[in-house]
Image (cartoon, rainbow, N blue to C red; front, side, top):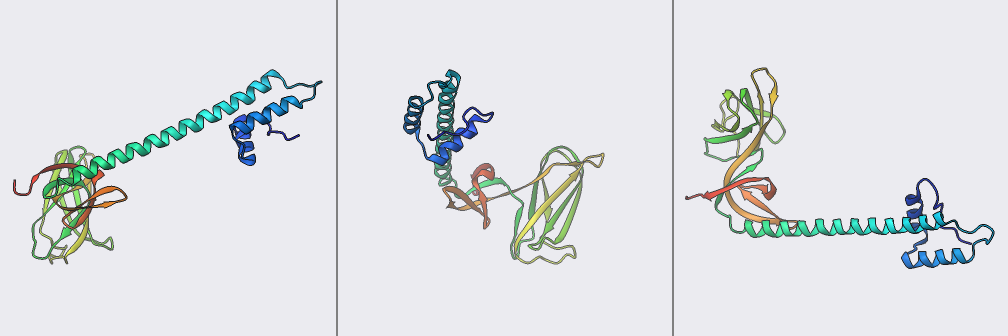
Length: 229
């Protein structure tokens, strides 16, 4: 007679799951097999009550766990769909408005000599170092500042390199480091401010186009008024 794994072992759920996987048994098949097992058991050594109960309990637990896992997965998918729908609907109404979002990219444009380097400090800083890096990760400009308070801060940059030469147009990366009065590094996080020029959709989520750069909707901190007021 076929035996349904080592049901009474110290790892009953694993054994039971493995047995079902190996045989492809469903709930109805399991109960039919269990009935046949009872019919054909040795009369001199009948199945003990606790063994029978254990088999039923293990199957019930497995079924409930599978049901819970399925419900959680379905709930997560529903929440994701709803969130995307809300984001996508809202995104369509914000073109032309100013946005503030986490990001470390700054766009250098020909003829522009005034750039805001934006960052947020977790606490008061005695010293701040702002580095501007090119596409290869080379530092092309370093700007230092002292005694800046916690919160949002902005430093000005004229778009030149360390030698005072205008940088080529393109994307550059902003890196900010800060230290307190005891030379302990504090958290500094870069952000960008710009006008939303357009929106595209990627995998069901809205991506904002700001100054030619793509910004995930999840990185948006706040959206203000339009460019003209």
